[in-house]
Length: 247
Image (spheres, one colour):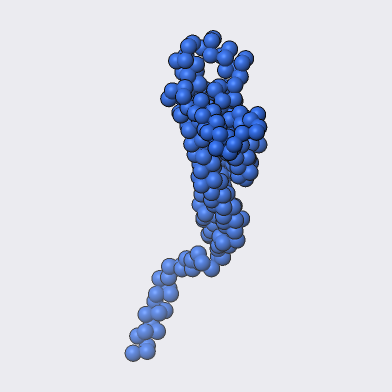
C-alpha cells in the first residue's frame, strides 16, 4: 500500500511539473527558432518595401524612356551622353544605391540601428534637392547676382520642362526614401525590441518554473489506515458478556 501511494504521488508530481513547464518551454523554443533562423515579419515587410522602391523607380524610368522618343534613343542620350540637368539615369542609380545599401544592412547583416537608413536618406535628399535646384552656375563668373539667380532658376526648370516625369521621379524618389526611414525607425526597430524583451521574459519564466513547482508529496498526504480485521464470534461473545455484566 505504501509503495502504491508513493508511486502515485511521484506520477502526479511528474505530470504537474510537465504541465507547468511545457507551455513555457514551447513558447521559448518558438521565439528562439524565430530569432535564429529567420528575420522578423516587420523586417521582411521593410525589405519588401525597399524592393518595391527600386522596381517602382525603374518602371517609371522605363516609361519615361519610352515616352520621350523610344528606349534605345533615350538610353543613348541619358546614359552614354549623360547630362545632370536633363537625365533621369542618376535617379535610377540612386534607387539602386538605396536598395543595395538597405538590403545589405538590414537583410544580410540584420543591423538593429538606424545609421544605415540615415545615410541613404541623407544622400538621397541631398542629391535630389541639388538636382532640382542647382544648375551650371559654377561655370558662370563675372555676372551680377540677379543674373546669377535667374540663370540658375532657368537651368533648374530644364529638368521640369520634360513633362510629368520631370516632377514624378524626383518627388516619388524623395517620398519613398522618407517612408523607408519612417518604417524602420517607428515600426521595425521598436517591434523587434519589444519581441526581444518578451522572449527574454519567457526565458526567465522558464528558468524559474522548476523552482516554483511543488516538491514530491509525502506519504502522510495520502495516508490510508490499515484494514481492520473483522471481529470473530468469540470476541463478540466476550464483548456481549462484558456489556451484560456491567448492567
